[in-house]
Amino acid sequence: MFSSFKKFILLTMAAVLLAATPAMAQSHRKTIVGVDQVRFEPLTQRVPVIARLVSRRNGYVAALVDGGVEKVNVAVGDHVRKGDVLAVVDVKSRKARRLVLEAELAGARAELQSVKTELVLTRQNMERQRNLKKTGAFNRSLYETTQQKFARAEAAIMRSKAVIAAKIAAIAVLDLEIARGKIISPYDGIVVERKTEQGSYLRPGDPVVKLIGDGMLEIEADVPSLRLAGLEKGTIVKAVLDDGVKFTAKMRASLPVENPRTRTRAVRFVPDWPKNITRLAHAQTVTIYLPIGAPRKIVTVHKDAIINKEGKNYVFIVDQGKAVSRSVRLGVATGGRIEVLAGLKAGDKAVVRGNERLRPGTAVEISKGT
Image (tube, rainbow, N blue to C red):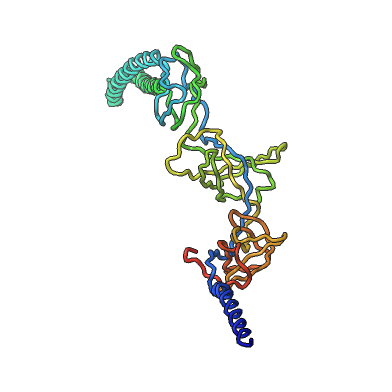
């Protein structure tokens, strides 16, 4: 009887030991987790603002001389380079007047040479008569007449020189007008409007084409006055086009003109375009992210470390190979991280993968990939 009872006790203890073996093995097995270090870093809060691309160079290219349009070399949509001839104005009459002036200039120069020759002869004659002053052959009346002739020759030379200068200046003006008969593109750009046709008549100032410079695009944003505190010249902001292309831009200037209805001011940014970007256009929409106020230093944790349980937030950190639960008080979100107001310090190793199955005191092993 006693032997049977003893056998029963032994069997029961063996069963208990067998049942406890997996649990004991489990208690010695470490949980693999991924961690991310808690950081102390600057926070710059940003707000999106819808902006637009604007060209620093755009406007109408105008005629500089009057005349009929001989030819228009460009169409809407054409890309032109600085120095390309956009259109040609008829300057044949100016070229003809230039030929007339050249002939008159040649005549004036010949006249000048003739007067100079007469002046030399008159001077020689006057010198001979002066040498006869102390002799009986001296004729005062003839000497005075020669002096008057000499003075008239000098005046004639001055008039001839003035005529020549006027002819040269007139030719220079015609040369300038003839050159301006070719309407030149002042910069690289795209023709977006054509304002004249072959056979039309242009006056100085009449528009020929409208150009938008495609190589000088900037961003212009209407920024609320209250948001200007976080902006200063040289501030770098993030931006994104409608097609998802991301880039950065540097603030160049804030225009000192406020819209009283919207309480905004125009701010210009110089974009740092990605390589090989194409199909940009004047007035194209772009979103920029403006900083709100000056940056401040904060403690942040990766968003995947946060565990919310019954309305409270917790984070598991790894301390001496074990999981330690910390209650945390959170602040603002910034990208993939969240501000920690209390509960963590910079340098803590927060568990971001595997934290959903952890319990306080669980033995953990940090994954080599983190």
